[in-house]
Image (tube, rainbow, N blue to C red; front, top):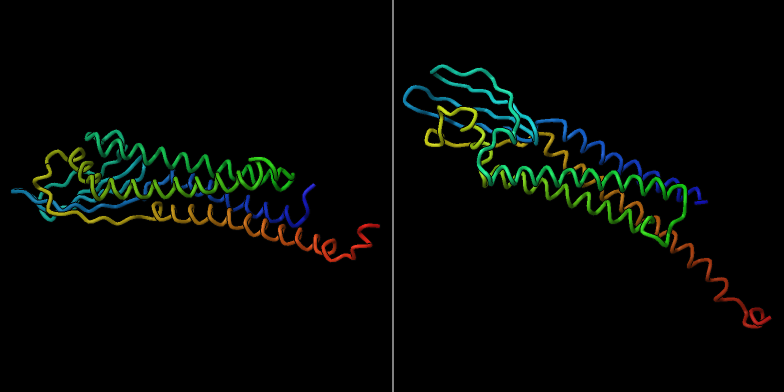
Length: 229
């Protein structure tokens, strides 16, 4: 059976890794990843299109200074993307976030298992916790990089706007500004929780190593005749 200290430290890691899993679930269910304001102008109207979306769903609002504005629209992101490059990168970003979700779940399972057992010499021990926590943080970081790259370089928002409002092709766009929402920034919390999970186990292993060294000292400094006897 594990010691009380080990149980408490691995349970702490369980809560941080499971917290990462819960945060990712919340992120997947929200659509506040980015809000893009696209200025539009043509011969009959001018104003802006505001598109707010997440990985799966979004909403667009047309705000015109003059001209007839269309009603607000709810849409599915992947369903509205026509260009292959933005669509592929968006799908890959979703895939990496699902991988991060799976890694966080496995990390929480490993930490919980270690709190009630002593599998030090197997992958189920601290090595497994390090692996899954590291992968969870790495996949989350890659998701952020891919999403930002898709929005900034591949003009994801502009591509959505052209599909949602065919009367305003790219030639009528006069500039775009992006504001990343809380769903996107929560990814940093996911990375932090995975790092904390690993750090707790590092401190536990360091303390365990020091205890083993202290237990060896009495034998090292014992009188030679006493050892021989």
